[in-house]
Structure formats: C-alpha cells, structure tokens
Image (cartoon, rainbow, N blue to C red; front, side):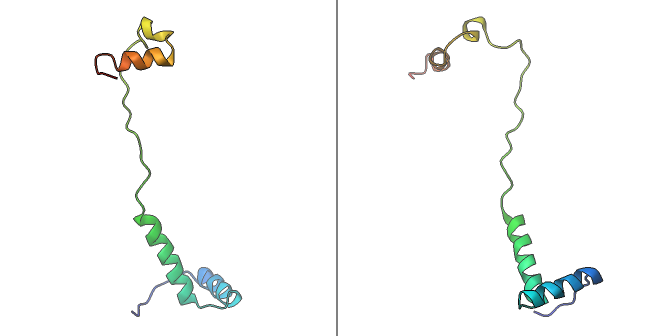
Length: 81
C-alpha cells in the first residue's frame, strides 16, 4: 500500500545514511521499525501482583519462631496436607 508520512528532516537524513550503509531502502527501514513497534506493543504486559496487605502486628506468637515445616503444618492444618 502506498502512503505518505511526514518525518523530521534530520531523521530522514540519518535514515538515508543508514539505508546506504546497510544497502537497503528507507522504506525497508520504516517497515522494520513499524514491525518492531507493533510486535512490542502486542506483547502482553508484565504480570503485576496486586497489593494484598492487611493491618496487624505480625505473626502469631506460635508462628514467629516456627520452622518452615511447622509453618507448613499450620497452613495445612485440618486440610489433609
């Protein structure tokens, strides 16, 4: 498809230099740039964990000094784990 775009003069001059150096065309450079931008923006955004804090004074006394195994047992207590 044929279209017209406005590009800053300095950017176009630099693009022409790059095109000559890489033995390609400005059109190919523009297409490559657009492909990169489109691909980047089509990627899903990074997962962000929502803030899920609560008010309190920390761990219960029985858990404050417990080992990892003890904490696991407390977490699965009554759940068959």
